[in-house]
Length: 177
Image (cartoon, rainbow, N blue to C red; front, side, top):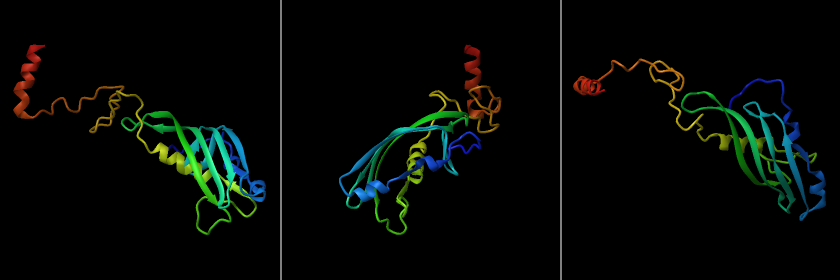
């Protein structure tokens, strides 16, 4: 994911949720939440153009069960020509966050009852973004010799590179035109 420095994003604090009330309510209680967050820097390496979705947090005897569906926008680059591409990621979250939190777990609830969704959203977004993307289905990519974007220009690197055994065939093709 592109790591552009932009001054117009909200802090990832919007992904920190106070769940203390659910922890004290005991098993069987749940809370539904809707997210519609503008550009947010989830971590140093993940910037989302938006994050939208619904999340249900349910208290179980083991901790908190998180279940939700999200869409997020990212800026990426084409796998063939490296042009900028805006993408929409769709991912589901289903995670059991143990409480009290065992030492060494990545997803946890702090002692003050704050659940930080940023690591979980980051992990899911990175998994979803790891799939290759093309700027368009017929992307021609870059010339491996000179780096010319073949979608915009024609390079002349390989015009004279022909196997001598095929030279006669090339002459025949030219004479038939």
